[in-house]
Length: 142
Image (tube, rainbow, N blue to C red):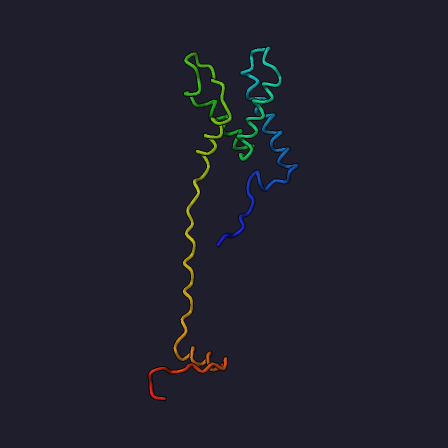
């Protein structure tokens, strides 16, 4: 049995809300990445493509999840160089942090189908009689 599934998360948003959500992720990504774009020669188009990638990867994440993941990324010492400088993250690193922190889905067993009610011989005979059907008897005395 295929039941319709309710839209959740990003897919539950209206197209306008989706656009606003992605734009806010883009602003946050630009703020995060801005500290790593030291090269003035990095073309704006390259920056725009990188931000767009972040929006694609993180669109199914809430803003609080992204903010918390960025905080956790900065705190984690394995995200620092040997000189102690923060390594440039990619959107997948933040998404991995977010997914690790989300509760794991629980498997829900479908309820056992109720057994079909059995019809007794007497009930079957009554149904046939009410329908005007008289079964023939074979091999016996008439």
